[in-house]
Image (tube, rainbow over all chains, first blue to last red; front, top):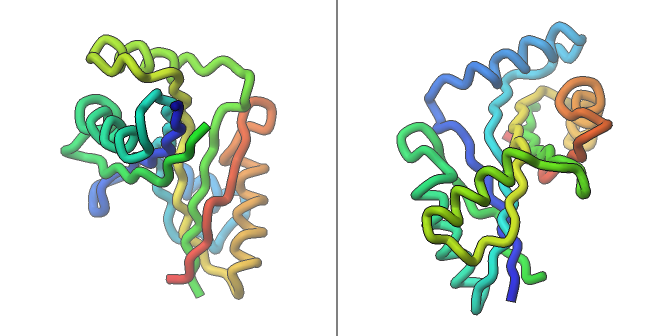
Length: 84
Length: 84
């Protein structure tokens, strides 16, 4: 079976996010004065073959730990797993 | 009130995603042979002041249309809106 896993990788709370800061400033300049803060991370969609959803999830966590997220500066969340 | 809006911006289906392709190849090289496809977009978290959740959502859609997403190559989804 094939599963599609959606992952968020976001900069850790408390760490500087210069890209988010730049976008917040740009939104202010465009007239969106109500914006307080912007944080920018990555949204990954991984399609992988696996026996079960829990196996797909386990595999994807291993991928995040090895390659997809930087454990020092980023947190990752597996948002949801769907069967295709 | 302040609301936190989570947004995904992903490359349109059918468009080439070279970053995703590179990551899929790297995962194969690391031994994750079951990976079929990877697509990479941005995950944005915008904190904005608004009267209501629907107002915050409307504002955020305007931000996506003006700055946060490229309407030619990307799709955006407002994943959820939470009150802080």
